[in-house]
Amino acid sequence: MHRTRPAMNNIREAVQAAKQIAHNGSFDGCDISEIDELTEAVDRELVRPRPNGLTLATYLNSLARSLRSHPPARKAVMQLDAAMREAGLTTDWEH
Image 1 (cartoon, one colour):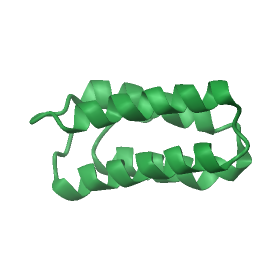
Image 2: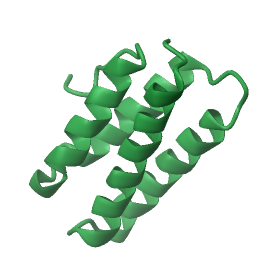
Image 3: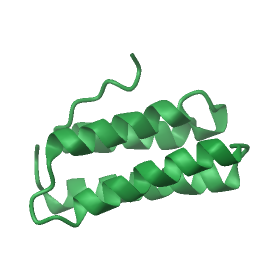
Image 4: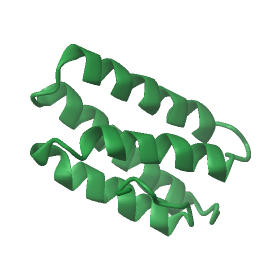
């Protein structure tokens, strides 16, 4: 994983965008709870001195999968995808 500050900042921004879209969109309470759990897990991992790339990839791909079926969230999903790729994380949310 590329551990550059810009890559980590882009992940943070993408996660924040995903959270905002979930809370401002047409997601039901169950979906929002799942998204909140995933974003909190990502935040916990990102504050570690050496975030684990596999752990981040797992959480971020799960977040993208949770959002992908909601058309208004497409931009947030693509932002997550770009941030993961920039950080050198595996993307498998489309499968």
